[in-house]
Length: 281
Figure 1 (cartoon, helix red, strand yellow):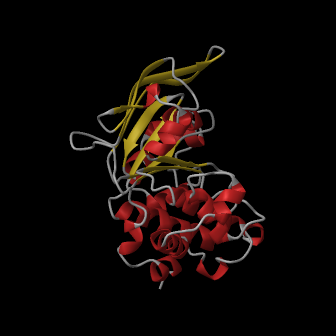
Figure 2: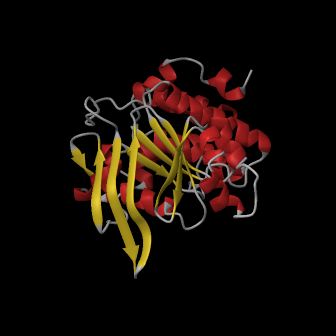
């Protein structure tokens, strides 16, 4: 049995990750909506009238060559970059362009960057405690008294991300893949409704990639979280993809299932060159 499935097969695991009171209204539409978003830097058009819709509980893969606008798109969603024009909505009531980065994170959007950033001198458990704590200073966070519900939540997330055997070990001795899972766990401690994951399998072994695919699939599998994955590894994308969006020159080039986009001549040309007849794989 898959390790993650064995460690986190109970439904209650996902209950600890669901926001206690979600302010996001998705009754009349998607959880994330970008309309005609454009971003330029010193004359370079990073995003050009981008339109993107993510449904509640969806797992979406975003692919595209370097310079396609993937990182700028995530920067715009999280408030790091302000677009020149367009709209970005989280549910039907929250205009993200009027909110700061901390406000957007508090609202329920979590982002995992490509390079994991964990506190290597702290244990796995302590990293999760720190991620959950209201007071983000290290000493108050580690000396605060946890409630039984908080302790249960930490241990459920530890099992979910497959790090129970390493729970009391230092994060610094974890493998690259395990650090990636720990960072995902740290985001889950904040109960996000939308999780943005940037190149999660870069530098991973084949086994770590398989476990990561299972983890991300299950996060969205209960329909309680939406997951957007930006990734260059097409084998990994194919293993998790339900719906794929292809970005090119800051706009959506193609959208559909992996089979649909991989057989699109425009996608083949963008990825493999005009003279190649091979499919994206």
